[in-house]
Figure 1 (cartoon, one colour):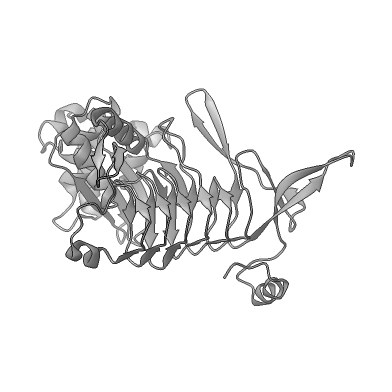
Figure 2 (cartoon, helix red, strand yellow):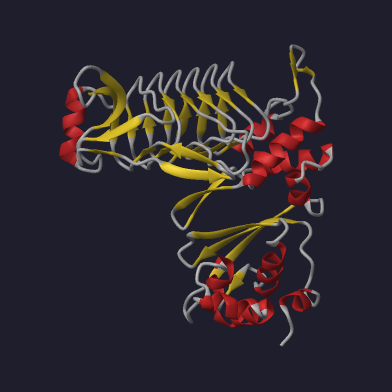
Length: 376
């Protein structure tokens, strides 16, 4: 039997592939494979065995397993060690996978960005991928948010290859506005309403049916899915923050951004969330939740759940020797500002309070609406 390395020599190279996304037959994202050292062989195999429409059936999976050579036995003995390979091992007769390929005009783009040795031209190509939403700082894989460190590497590399210059006659900056050279056709095709005075930097993705209101600011690397999103007046979506579909982001509110270290999970607002005015949020805001006006959700702040009578544990994100604790609001919950008495009762501690009840329950919704604390 030929080795994995020997098999790779017999199939086409994939140097211009930036990354692969793999979806199951239900169209769930099950893997993201960036084209960086250590992952390049997997990309070669998956691209080679997929049909013209990107499909992989059980027969194609068998060919993939043959190409993986000696790694198949290792994967069978050590579950969890070769997760990409296990997708092929577990594929049944009526199941399938589908690959989505993101390519660029440059070879080994992510490898060069990772070492921050990419040229200015390579960086601009990568920023354009961010503009199109083809790459992003975090992706939900098998229901779990995963950081995509190459996005941070790309943004930092861009800073290093571009100096300050005059922009639009009055700005002195490294990063132009996303819409600086838009034509009327570009605006029409994008399907986004940019109100007067808003500022969206290049490298941010703004999905169709988004409204970016007056004086709102969206930074490089941010991702806004669209489909009914409203970024209200004076709101701030910081670098690499991720905003889902149909999110109402209240006036004057902000979401924390990240640029370093690469590998730290960005702040995320999932689909159908409503965030009130003058909030500051970080961490993960679960689908369908509502954040009342004025809530400050900083790292390390306690989140108390009235349903369970306990605190919601933060999500741990480890980068090297550093551990980050990201606050989490569970799906379909109402979060309000509040305080909790200390154990000795001598003082109160500022906290975020999750009110009892599920927002999918009509009686709960009527109760909260009557209290006047739901953001509309």
